[in-house]
Length: 598
Image (tube, rainbow, N blue to C red; front, side, top):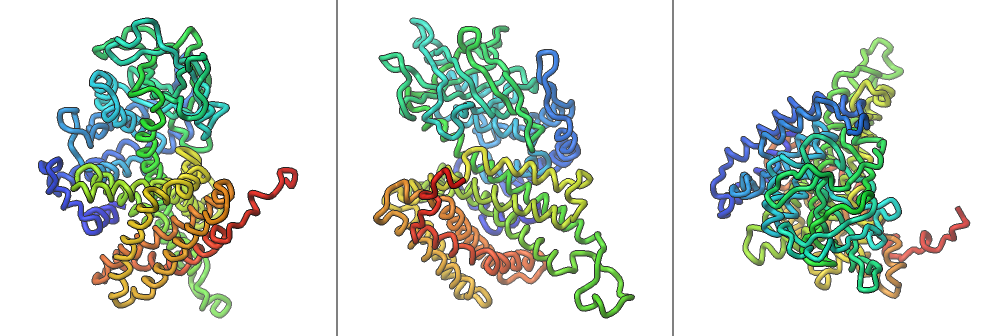
């Protein structure tokens, strides 16, 4: 993976140009490389050796506490010591002032080594990043700083047992806590009661405290929660109470573990049902203005969606690398030309069989294409925060548009890569003797959390492609056109440029046709096929753009990327027509089928 990461960062995304930005001026390409080296080594030494162990020794509740393997405690402590929790923050906040794209690439090694262990840190960083943007100075000093240092860890508490993705239906309540609630040094103080479900990292003893970011509704003048998402506010609710200086008071904050969920994958990460306020009310401090909680939480959710995409990506990479190793060493069968003709012909490694190479190429195209997508989106984050006004605005538009793809595409197609990895291993792949079955189980969650495909599709087709009267989609089409023009002028790439050009035209037609003469419900009934077609167009663009950068190279590394691009255009891009035809035709089959037909 490292060679591909280095190519994407240095030759494709040209991260060296970021050194011209004032905020990154103290760095060099050497320091970027050193961070990647450190994380690659630490992940290999402290995370990877325990990935199977934390999968088999699931978190459990004993003697009033959640028990995790000792190895999880050690690995997390080593990660905290690395300083990566605050990597993108300024030095005054204990950070390294790293570009987000470098931090994402570096943390990919930990996710690949053990996503079950790495989740704790991922959630903590995202929690602290939200507070550094939207919190008060006191909230930054107490809650964000203690997470960035690793003294405390953090979570996001959104879903509830009765309301998964339907956030307007959350029932957790937040009531002003006494007459002096507005004067609390840590922000307006509230008393929270309710239940939250599926909370990753919701309880553990890895750190002395856990900072929960909780969505809840403040009752209106009639004492009832405001309907819909308008009434949702965001609250900081620590597991243990703290004072204005960040010292633990020794009191529980009425946040209790109601149960641990037993999962298919990600078993190294606790996943909890939490009860707030069973003993009278959990103290929470409001972040920002009342009723704006969902807007603030999306800061964390959008970052989490890109990180979910990266997690799915590197699990795909891990399965692909295991498949290549197995296929090179597993000897079975004979070449098709020799089979049945020469009984004395020696068996060959299975990598010599065309169908095995098909499965390897598919995995390579999915996982390495996804890696390009995630790093491209991370680079957009850096552009949004550090580039000129025009470039920053364009980066923000593209990031809004591509975030549903960055989350959903890897979670579907790198899962398919993991399925193919099992297939390459044959019957052995279906056993726990090889890692590929765990890769598949760990990856299966990524299609669900941080918004299912249905949620991402509705977000994309219902909102993102129509932002600013379609400005984001026009900008993406213009970027793709630049690649098409470049590729069309290069020997061997012009036919692929033509194919991509036709796919973009089909996407634009489907986008327009989906809204003509139909209701919103009818339009969005085919949101997932639209999402899938859109994603494949984006990945085809990235692969073609990568191919233009490798056009003059003749080494095996470049040839591998070029064959992956050829595979994607021959085997995957044709699927776009089938998906987008359904959208353009405004097919209503799924909307019209009566429930009693099932």
